Length: 365
Image 1: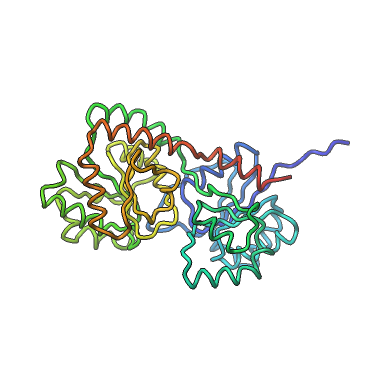
Image 2 (image 1 turned 135 degrees about the vertical axis):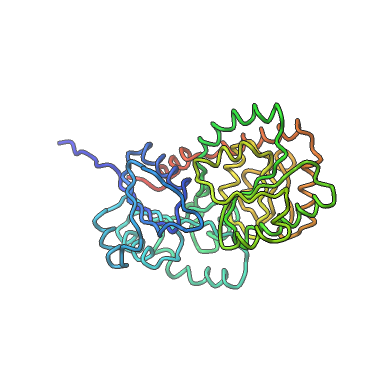
């Protein structure tokens, strides 16, 4: 007698989620028919995304579970795969150990880059004792994270890359019309999208750009910043933040971001610390040349200097100004060509490819 195989069940244990996370999980549902139970921490007030409906995915608030209740919930779900965010949530670790003990694949997300400091070396020593019985796989973002994963003792055959994939279709679709508009009149507008927190470098960016303007070296370019956060008022009200050619646009919902990017000419992300940065891929898909600091991990995949942008030293105002001036001195025709290369690189990794990797390497049944 034939047995009917049930649909795969996936338990996802996350800290903060963003629209691109749901896009990847949507693709997994579409590809495999999976039922996904997604437990996540409460929405961050600095990024109050409206997530909308996602058939096949049931959202649960982590704050409604004690650690014991979460384990009971996981046992009722009886998943074929568990995907979890790092090791910061002890309740998540408890679930992963229990599922790993039953032979269920458990994958740890890793977006922290290897820096080689004392704290990370200590983590690698301690991980040898608990990692093998907690996680079967590590899914890393890029090469710096793979370096960390290998030092944590994970078998190279159980390390995946490409953890983050942007929800590319809205940006690719908007790029077609944006390119036509740029070809007619290229917008001399730098765009920066990030939370206003110390590591994102908004103050440095405003200082650098305002100084170029005051020196008469910025041409007719302007700078727009999108986002909110703990330093929003501080940066916006600083002497450079109040410059007439700098605009602080506040938080923008994900659905409205493509239109904001369509009106821009070049993306700039001067982060002091940025293990990856999905925003880089989003902006690449919109056909924007990229100016990134060397701290931005996503540059390894989506930036090719000088084909589609430039790299500057993190925290170095003079070097950031060099990159800004390089763009200001570039012809509109060349900026358009650079944007085309960005669009090609941005579209090279999609939620559908992410889902295929999850099915091939993790969701084995």
